[in-house]
Amino acid sequence: MPNPTAAMLVIGDEILSGRTRDINMHVLAQALNAHGIDLKEARVVSDDRDAIVSAVTALSDAYDHVFTSGGIGPTHDDITADCVAAAFDTHIDVRDDARDLLLRHYESRGVEVTEGRLRMARIPDGATLIENPVSVAPGFTLGNVHVMAGVPTIFEAMVASVLPAIKGGAPLLSQSLRIDKPEGELADPLRELAADFPDLSIGSYPFQQNGAFGSNIVIRGENGADIDAAMLRLSELFRGAGA
Amino acid sequence: MPNPTAAMLVIGDEILSGRTRDINMHVLAQALNAHGIDLKEARVVSDDRDAIVSAVTALSDAYDHVFTSGGIGPTHDDITADCVAAAFDTHIDVRDDARDLLLRHYESRGVEVTEGRLRMARIPDGATLIENPVSVAPGFTLGNVHVMAGVPTIFEAMVASVLPAIKGGAPLLSQSLRIDKPEGELADPLRELAADFPDLSIGSYPFQQNGAFGSNIVIRGENGADIDAAMLRLSELFRGAGA
Image (cartoon, one colour):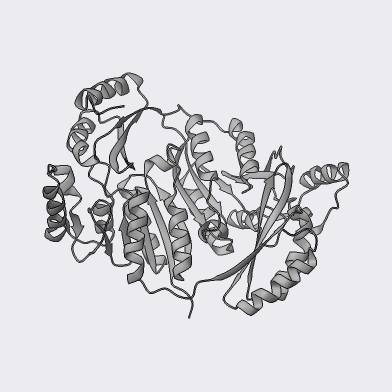
């Protein structure tokens, strides 16, 4: 059975304006890969209602799971929860379970419960809460969409909260070999290798280091013996140029 | 007149598998912002023909410009040029001008011209070449799609090659203020500030540092005097908590 598929949706003007460099995509990609879920696509959109609703709808239709990052804080530009509710045509308001979590947390610390903070208890009907061990305000899962915070420490903690509840597949196996030759000299033999191992995915990821070109060859697949055989052929082809 | 809009398409299994962390999106976002082009959306797709063709088509229809990164090297998994040609229903083959560039470069350095290397001269009919000052193999512009390499040093150089030929608008002005209070205490006053300055975009970007929460407030707009007035109000609101 093929692995479940997933998409990520990063919500935030700050990424698209170049103010902030996103890290959550990389964190999610690694976590999903280890859990046997194939991340097929990622999108970044701005804090714009139409853009968020249409991306959530498109990705939710196309993939088994959608993971979102950003836009669930207390401020006026945090509109993700309302947009996800709209995409599923579901009612949303401050929900008792989420409000109780927040009130308990704030009261125990003597923190004022502002209108903004209460917005973080806006949860669509029928959604399941995602635990936030960092700052309590929860994420949620509605349908196949998992809504999480954008602050990297909180995002990572929420991913760890939600993944065990999602059925994964077999983690993709991979081996890689660094070859200190320009990609142009690898292309023809790699094409033949790929043709001889049609069940494996053979990727070439060029780099430039100290003025010299090289490439990391990554062989991925589900059958470890096939990968071993292809790696052996690869290292024979480029004996002396590998690391 | 509003600024031109743009989208980015990152092509590469290595980003989605978590093997590599993308940097090109951040580089492009900063360059476009400085050039007065609004980056509205970014997508990452795998080295899959259908995924690339449909993303190029959708983004090219929706935005003034599309910038792609990755998949134009010499190996079998480099299929971006062919996919962009397919999206525009345009013929593609090794083109004389691009081949001459490559041959001159390789012959001057005594480098063998492999079949793989010649693939990098596959350019769609009607496309304009994008100069690659790092390793010669060119990118290209077809319609409103600018096709560039994924290796970060080459991508950045190609962005510098292509941007001067694209008409930009007014760079968005912005000022920011770091406030060492949790976002929950900023939300209500910020909502009022945003209501008082409807032509400005006021974003709150929370962070966590040494266990304490704070937020960077960024005010963006085209009118510098409005931004000054809003920043003054903001600093008065949070006197003592700012940096």
